[in-house]
Amino acid sequence: MRSLCVLVALLGAAAAQAVGKECIPRNFGFDSVACVCNATYCDEIGDVSFPEAGYFTVITSSRDGLRFSPETLVMEDAPAADSVVVRMNHNQEFQTMMGFGGAFTDSTGLNIVKLSEGAQDKVLRAYFSPEGIEYTVGRIPIAGSDFSVRPYSYDDVEGDVALEHFALAEEDNLYKLPLILKAQELTRQPLQLFGSPWSPPAWMKTNGKFNESGELLKEMWQPWSDYFVKFVEAYEAAGAPIWGLTTQNEPLSGFDDNWGWNTCGWTAEDMRDWIKANLGPTLQAAGLRRLVLMVDDFNRDTLPWYPKPMLEDPESAQYIDGTAVHWYSDQWVGPSVMDETHMLFPDKFLMYTEACEGNWRQNINHFSTGWVDWNMALDMTGGPNWAGNLVDSPIIINADADEFYKQPSFYAMGHFSKFVFPGAKRVFSSTVSEDDVEVVAFHETSGRNVIVLHNRGEEAKNLSVTDESGSYLNFPIPAKALQTVIF
Image 1: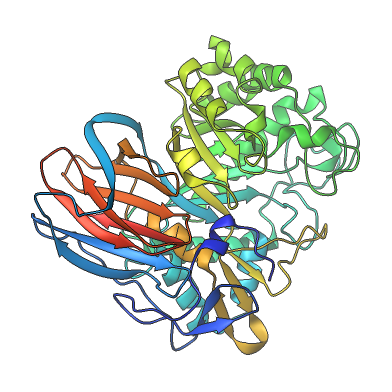
Image 2: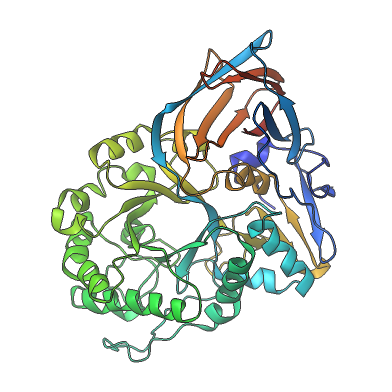
C-alpha cells in the first residue's frame, strides 16, 4: 500500500481507545499502523455528543497510537502556563461549509462487493453511520473513469445523437447504486451526491478515443448536454437524488497526447460558450437548475484564470454556482490563488472535489467549502485501474482475507467529517507565535463550536484555546497529532 496522503504520515502507530470500539492495529512497514476490520468486528468512534456548557471534549489521533481518543475537560478562567494560545472569534465569519466525503468509483464498489455481506456493511457503516465518520458528500463519476476496469460511456453506439441507446452500465447497477442506496440509509444527514464526467462517448470527440488529446466536437455540444440530463434522471429514478454536477473532470488534461485515461479537452472560452448556449439552458429546460453546477474541477494552478472567462460572462455565470478544485498542484502553488478567486467572485463557492495529499488548513482557511477524497476503497495494489494509475485510499480491501484496513487518512478525514456538518460557518482562528500548530475553527447557529488542530512538530505542546468569552480550554496536544475540540 503506497501512502500518498501527507496526513497518513502524521497519524498513529499503535492501537488506541475509541468511544465505541478499539482499533486492532497491524503494521505494514510504515511509521503508522492500519486498523483491521472484518465481518464481525471494526473499531468505531461512536456517536460523540457535544458536552454541557462549561465543558469541552477533545478527540485525538496521533502518530504514537491514539485513534479518536476522547477526553472531556472543564473550561478554566486563565491560560495554562507555557501554552500556545489559540484564538477564535465568532464574529468574523467566512464561508459556509458544504461537507466532507469521497467518491463512489467503480473500483470502490467492485472492491467492497468482493467482501462478505457482514464486512461490506462494516465498510459502509465506517464511512456513513452515526458510529462512523459520517460522510455527507459523494462524488459519482459519470460513466467510466480510470478507476474502472474498462473505458466506457452510457452510449457507445456511434452516431446516436438522439441518445436512444443511452443506458446506465453494469458498473452502476452492481458497484455504484447499491452502495449509494445503502449509504443513504445509514447517514443521518442528507447525502449530497454530485456527478463528474471523465469523457463523453468516444464518437463525440475529435480523436475518437476516450483518452489522449481530444475535444468535444462542436456538433456534439447539444447531445452531450442532453447526456447530462439523462444521467441525472437515471440516477434519480434509481433512488439516488443528485445534488450537483461538475462540467468536466480535469478539462486541460484533454490536450495531452500522452494522457492515459478518460478525458476531454476544454478551453475556458469553449467551456463558457457551451455552458451559456447548451448545458445551462438544457438543465433549466429539464427542471434541473436546482442542481449545483461547478466548473474547472482541476488543480489549484488553474485559479483564477481558467474559471474567470466563465464567471465574468453573465450569460454563463448565471448557470454556475461554484469552482471545483483538485489538490495535485498544491505543493507548488500556494493558497493565495483561492483567496484571489474568492475576492473576484465572492458569490461563487470554492470546493475541493478531489483531494487527498495536501494541507487542509491551506484550503479550508482559504475559502474551500469542503474536502472530497478520491476512492473510498481500493485493493492491496491500489486499484483496479484500467490505465495502470494506481494510488492509495483511506480504506484498503483484502478480499482474500475478507478484511479491510482503515489507514490513518481515514481518521484524518473523520476529524472533520464527523463534526463539521453542512451549514457550519468557518470563523476566524489563529495561533500566537507557533508555526508547528495549525488550526481551523467553525461554529453553528445552534452555538456549537468545532476546532481542528494539527501539531506538525516532534514535541507535545500545551494549548490554551479562547473564544474571547474569558474562558480557556487548556489541554495538551501530542507530537504529530490531529485533534478535534467540541464545545
